[in-house]
Length: 313
Image (cartoon, rainbow, N blue to C red):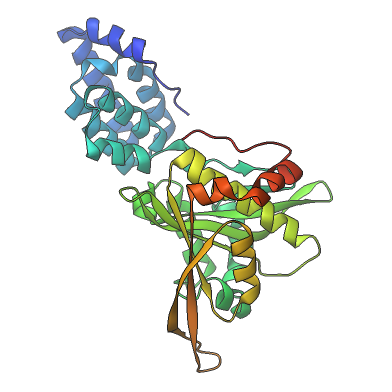
């Protein structure tokens, strides 16, 4: 990962800015592009890391364009750094702020608790995800609207591609919930944020487990708290929505216990293909203030995670 370039280093590069240095940076960028096109990603990224401390000599528009080229190459960390340099000179640019949001390193990092660890979907989770996607009961509770890949090979290609895509290209961010069993981390469920909106600072939350096993309640609660903390306090969302199928009262009870407020019911909104009957969809939402004011959550953070929330927004 590229280390962040401090503001004073940017200013120093700007003071050094002359035709020779600018030309050197541009040659480095051209070399990196050639290496990436020829499949030498490691060398291309090393070249970018070499020139980043001096890239401040370039104009903000050029820095943003380089960031976009890095995104196309799948170099999200480097793209984020170039966008960050561009924002230093164009702090009011909504386009650059959106690009920074979509390439935030936070999105790709695991979220670690005490008894659970949430890992971003990748090829290592292929077997577990394929198992989940082929559980009819699981899909009826969590993902009725999901488009399931037809084969494991198709799923593998999707998972490989996701690791190189920014958030707006994926449309969601999804994690596998792992629990420590016999000193190894075992996948037990999935959790994620979909319908992500940077402009409105909101997303839709979901969680699901293909099997009901002993100790699942603690894992589900801890994972839920970790994701809400991540969404509000690390990403900066202001509203998280949860849509619960009306024939799943257990899920609705759990949602409300986390501080979600029931806002309404979409009556007969979904057709249950298994029964031929239409079911309601309950709309719930949690604002940051709701999470802050839920006393139960404060006690759960201490009891399950041994700490208070990490507030960054």
